[in-house]
Length: 148
Length: 155
Image 1 (cartoon, each protein chain N blue to C red):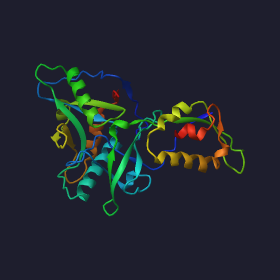
Image 2 (cartoon, one colour):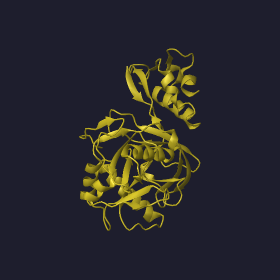
Image 3 (cartoon, rainbow over the protein chains, first blue to last red):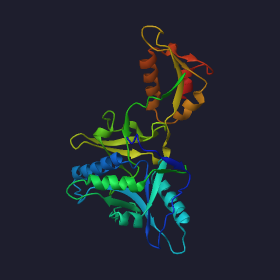
Image 4 (cartoon, rainbow over the protein chains, first blue to last red):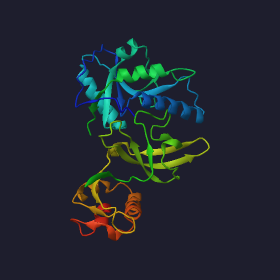
């Protein structure tokens, strides 16, 4: 539980998200505290092992879509949120860009079966807790209200 | 008067970001994510617990399609579109009321509690359990607007 975290609640992001055509806008739903990300990564690895699906890495899940030709980031945001709403719902979400993740050393790996579902690897043989904390910081403290 | 979160009965935590890698129609939870191990066919509450304690948890329902205790996994079909805030019920509690039980007065917020309408059949029993175990007798519930508070909660 992130009892020390002070969130900012908004209807639309106040971040200046910069993307080139083809770069991904990433959405994370519900919760992205480091405790939550750690549990998610451990859970996904455990479930994969138990169902004989050997993941080659620890990871957390996100959805993402690339910026289209002639598309502005707010339009992409609406498209991404609209798509995710058809699959999953949460009260809040946060946004981060593929370049922001890449600059911090993170990868995005298309993982399916939904066409816009991506893993963010967080260690191979063991879960990298420093990377978990860094990713939680990158997701930030802005909670954007998900439309119902 | 205080606001109490409604007793949701058995509940299983789910992560809306996670997707089964071959079958998007199902969600796999760990046994440890459940308050109690359900049985196949159960309809359970699924919950996205809120980080911020001032915010209500987000809940919906799911049908349990498999329970694999050996592997520690529960397979669910989640109503992802059905998530909503946990209703809070304004109640007044009088610990002095009879045999150590509480006296619960269901106030004029019955409209809010009707958010549970259509949840699933198990919620009738959950409400019943909540009233019976907490209040210890249905007759201890004092209506303040509806002639039958139990029906007001469950219909």
